[in-house]
Length: 196
Picture 1: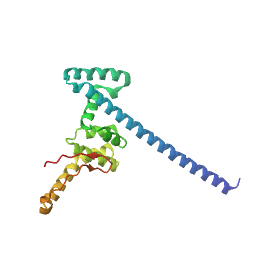
Picture 2: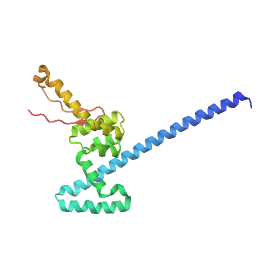
Picture 3: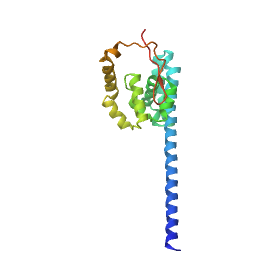
Picture 4: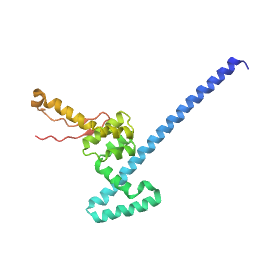
């Protein structure tokens, strides 16, 4: 076989291998993202179910005991993800992220580990700010922690506050009618309450 023809065949094989490798890796990434999203939603549903059906029925003592019992049973059957500490995190998850649609949207982009970093934040605005930053900037958990540690949300809030309070024209302006929703980039909405 002539050398040029052999090189062409090798080049075609290498290109085919490269293309197939890319397809496989892309599918693996999509599968991992879908599995992560399903797991995050499962944790939200578990926390929601426990919270609504047991703890909010104002049976606190029973509720505390049922979490321990459920955790023991679930961990025995399904593994460490369902130990008591993790069930309590699922309860916190539902308490901090009450809107299922927001969780569905975020779970497509954020891992359970991201949510565990967001849960302790003090305000819903801060949680949504950092969640949006993590999704739009494709932040890993470590980078998300850095943004939180540097108080990026707080600094932007202070900067926005100073920009509006320092300008008398802006300070004295009152909106004629408050907007219904503030739309965030990724498509969630945050309802604000205005004092009249």
